[in-house]
Image (tube, rainbow, N blue to C red):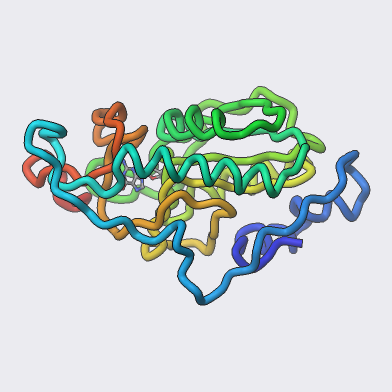
Length: 240
Ligand code: 5GP
Ligand code: MG
């Protein structure tokens, strides 16, 4: 039932994942339509933004702004509409990956009219200061029951794909009616495990970004835009 955009779903479904819940009649809900199939035509909505140099006084820590506050606001309206179109009148159980997805989730949910249940999951960064350090770990677990629910997992950024594929496989074990994923940013070129999100805010190039929930050493989450830190603030250089 999942289109080719959702490689992780299709993969997981082979192992008795979410889509099989429908087949076993475990859900009281009508099946949702599959997300649109991938096409070779570039999706204008998620085209890489053009980086702009910020006014020196606006964001003194940033070398460039990749996505402005206005662009985020505009895109979130459309993303909300895309999500509502897919779910119809169904209730959605949102699982936000904290801390990174806090700002994105809060603003996105204001653009969705469906009944919403909200839960959060905390995942340790598997990076240390210099490099990727293996598997992400779950630090704070879910409290809502996800069985027979339509789960929408929201994260700030899809990079190697390790974090979301881990959480999706965890959620699938809880017998939800469906699992879909929504990310604000997608660095498609960096994937180490096969994974596509169902909803993407913006495709961005392979640059380490901060702002709008995304941090560097827990700083910069409160910037209203998304940008690249000035080189002298980027430590270590591997994350530049
Ligand atoms: P993945 O498991 O897909 O490699 O990474 C997902 C997580 O890595 C994100 O939720 C985020 O915490 C972190 N991450 C990946 N790229 C960036 C980035 O450019 N900036 C920041 N601040 N975090 C990132
Ligand atoms: Mg994160």
